[in-house]
Image (spheres, one colour):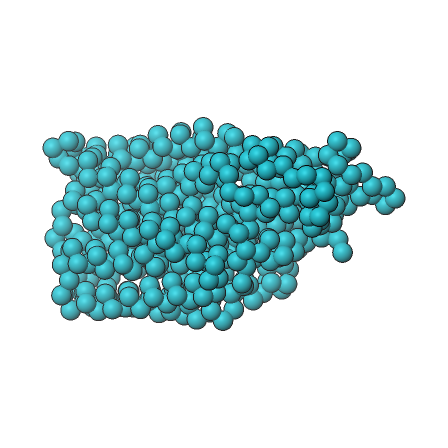
Length: 496
């Protein structure tokens, strides 16, 4: 790395000055060095430590779904289907506001600090949910839990993009986001055990289930301690020496230190350091400079948010109300559903790095939309059993899971580093507000009608949104596969 002044030039980390002030120009090879790395134990540890967050989210969402029957039967709460849908919408509303607020902070104060702030909020709110005494308290604690998880989305997706080499970025992002479904499986098992009257009274079983999430969150705190701050964020925000030290440490741990001659050949980038990016510049970047990319990201986010949240938050109600499945048996139906959702990103994820983003977005969104329309029609004419309905969901979400993860991949890699976290937050928030918050409440109302045709209308709406997103993705998405982040979207601080 070199720090470049108006008349001086210092080359190499040993000659680097203390953290440079905003406005100073640096020339650095840090992005090239990060992308030149082969996969190592460091990257595996990053996947494990960050994937745990999505396991937490999967646990939370699954518990909310599988525990809905227990919440309706609890003598203290006595929730209706609408109450269940309202509390799930509150969780998503919290995630929306949390993503926006914490996303702004992530770009200002760094990725790593937000790891611990958002996780602390999640832990305390989840534990408080277990102590809920009425609808208002339950809705409030679910809202705060969602705020913590929403903040996690922004910091972690940013970190994935900025630490993982370009040629592995698509698959890694999809697998980490897909680990949500390992949490879903864990939540299903917890529900099976804790809602079984032979093991525990349902009055207390759902409360213990939520405490499980808080305990798992404590494990995450320990795993996060060693994850470094993003060197890409540091080099722009006035800390180039610290960025250099982190990259050098990663190279040493991976046994991939480049020879001086090889480093000289790496592409370099010149940047003007800054301490923050004004919101006016953020708005100009998202809605003027990259308007088309913003519309693509919004379309993908809205479609997958409605598709996922509307169906997954209420699938337990469908099983109990239309197929007569006991609430303490719902978890058994989640396990194959979760398996399909995790296997999708795991098996199809590498195709996003080889066949490319545009083609795979079109395929996964389009196929999942068509399959939902078909299975919804079969549901409406009452030809599916609980088992065949679950198989249909398993196949649908084998394609829908990588599609949903691709939405996060798209909005996190196609915008400049200075606005990356807030861009993720904005599109997650808007997409979830439009497609996600309304979805569970809408489906709760549709299920309450007792009409299969009403529920089919909701499924059909989700299918249309996914197919429309497939067309938009094919036509306008960016071919970012195997490309350095700085090539996909140049930093705002770049100096020609």
